[in-house]
Image (cartoon, rainbow, N blue to C red; front, side, top):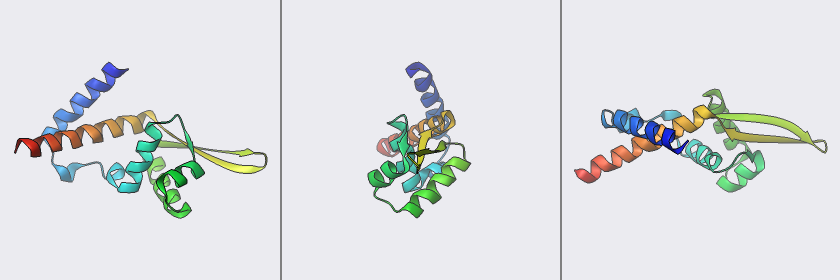
Length: 117
């Protein structure tokens, strides 16, 4: 899997070389959505309450941004009940992982370009 991710990142970096900062993925680039995707990249899944506490955001803010990521296919939402209490759990999808890897590669290429002058 690391070889595949490395190849995907290299391909994204090559595309980023031909792009500029205005070509960033607008769905992921927004601060709260990037934080959600980044948090989910480091865990198999997180509950709504865990994400809300981790990111220190309101219920409404998390709901709106999570819906945008869900609509883009970057995260999946599972709703269940635990002892009659609703439980919402989010996980990063394969498309979300790919989009995050491409976004990070693009950012790395932009940073490298700035450093090289």
